[in-house]
Length: 175
Picture 1: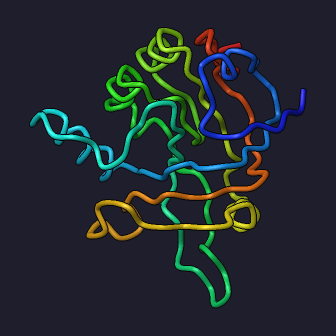
Picture 2: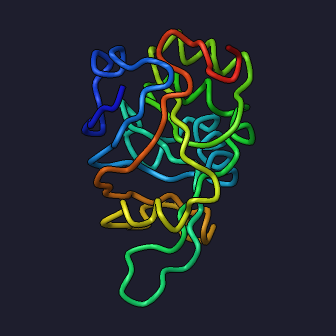
């Protein structure tokens, strides 16, 4: 099924998604890769706040290339999600609504997705230039010292993804 959805999305909206659905996301998503996840996790361990309210938000595992003149962002392809798996259950338990990346997730992440009625989307690897065209605004909001791994707030319009793990916790990779 092809769907057009606004992000962030409510738990009830996420529960309508099924594995294999093609979804075009419009609204706000955030980027964070390995270094940003590590820093967020360390902040939580110290009792500090995260740099943005993750409740119902979507994190895109991506670090863009530099933007060409006249562009909002450079190539914006997904990063392998498994590199964030040691931090993901904690973030999901704090209300993270979902993630966009590529590749399989651990059983612990799949259980956390089911427990929190979250969702894991895949973006097509190797299509970073195409994906960048769906990003209409990009702003670094935290960890600027991390360069391409800084946390960015993105405004997207019809950003194409596929539901890999729906709120039931079952992954297309395991079917």
